[in-house]
Length: 201
Ligand code: FE
Image (cartoon, rainbow, N blue to C red; front, side, top):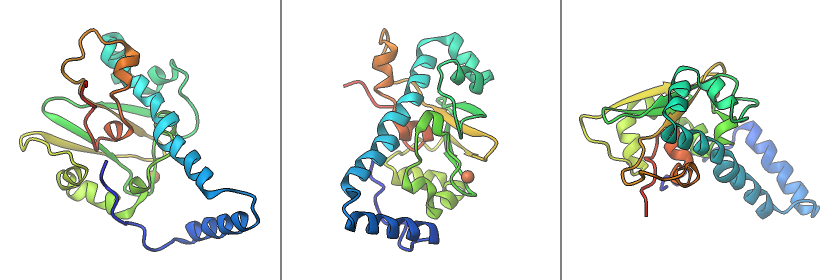
């Protein structure tokens, strides 16, 4: 994922406080910033999104589960025990050949923690939050995702009440794959809508 230009040049008061605290604790030898980075990365990109990936893989694998996910995502996801804060009310939005779904929180950073873990920095940054609505196609291109001109893009604005999980299109060439194999193709970004599902090697 190449979206590494700097959005956050200025620290807000909260970030400044965190930075100050981290500096003091590091100087006192109480924490190792590198270790903290590893922990954050683990929750941002590994443990958290693996839950969502299993939900998507199950929907690809099991049409009944997909129906349930479409009708009542909260209950369907809860059946896999992926519950908790910031995941109380979920809606799954399914990509189709005609329509691509993209999730944003224009107001702040609402995000389905129970299935995706911690939000990436860019998701919380003002440029993504404003531009995803104004120019979703341009934003997707910056993520390296160029959609056919005829594909509609539907943008979903998360709130504290309702959070979204994108179910990407199942890649070609995955007939007969197990849920575990399928889950490996589902990235965090694919479930936000800024990427496609991975292709089979
Ligand atoms: Fe929010």
